[in-house]
Image (cartoon, rainbow, N blue to C red; front, side):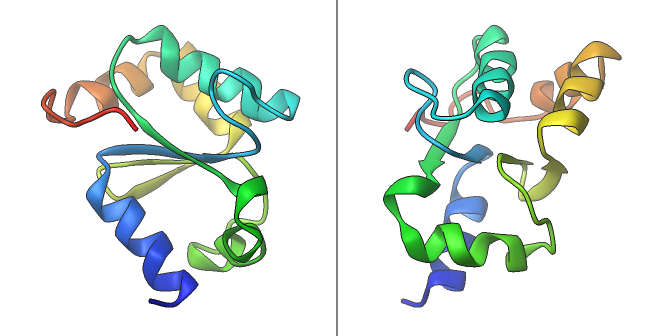
Amino acid sequence: MDVMERIDQAVKENPVIIFMKGTPKLPQCGFSSRTSEVLLSYGKPFAYVNVLEDPEIFQNLPRYQNWPTFPQVYINGELIGGHDITLELHENGELKKMLDTVDSSSEDS
């Protein structure tokens, strides 16, 4: 499976997923740290991909939805955005509404 197919599969199979530098428990950049903290604050499961552990994903994810930076958050297969947009959605209450649409039986990765 090529890298774009792997990215697409991860996005489609996980109702909420963050592609980030590091992991939610051990983030490797400030933007990834703050974005994963926001997601964790809702207490809902989400998947993550540590782009630092997969050079192919690190190099090609920006082409997937034409979004050049990390982290990238997807909800229900749709790119929500990166750090700034996720924080803005959190602050104005929209992120909670988006997360409330996610099937609660999804698994945490």
